[in-house]
Length: 83
Image (cartoon, rainbow, N blue to C red; front, side, top):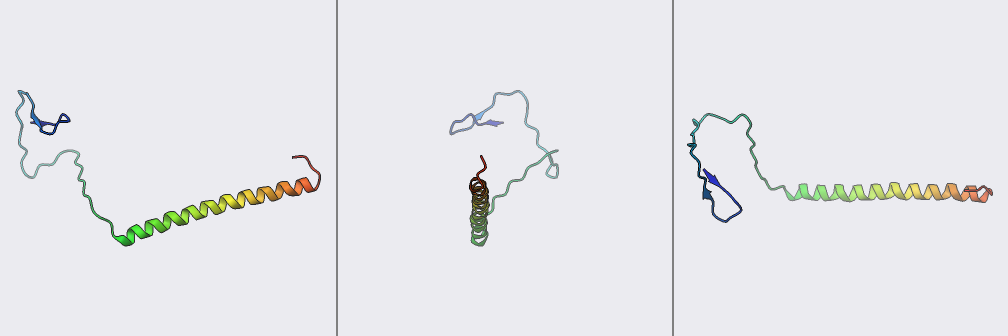
């Protein structure tokens, strides 16, 4: 059994238990398979456009909220009401 302890070389574990080989077709109860793939440039470009579009949308909503809020306050001040 090999243990990695943060060193550059693995060390042998001092254990009395023997490693047991599983048959080739046997699978663990829970198994995680990790596969790394590169995404295409078109996928990257689409993601960037989605982010930029989202930023513009949120900034437009905030701008409209501030503008209409200021207009409402200005109307009330013009009518002589207290804020």
